[in-house]
Image 1: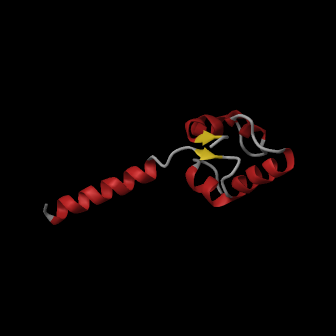
Image 2 (image 1 turned 45 degrees about the horizontal axis):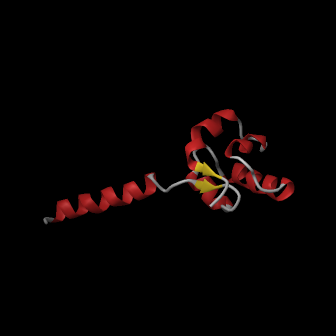
Length: 87
């Protein structure tokens, strides 16, 4: 296998792993993971998610994330396939 094919295969594998990281458990993920893996969620919203779950308790369903200040229905819809509440 020549170098360009090897490089292409390595890059494809790396990109696939990043794109298909899998659902994030919003009950156990830290702020860095939430901000990295959920689209439209930065450090401030990630912190708000963690503060909400510490105050109210664990999320029972993914759609409950809209109860967090700053996280609306549009953000939920954007991320609903990448959010889970159980392992």
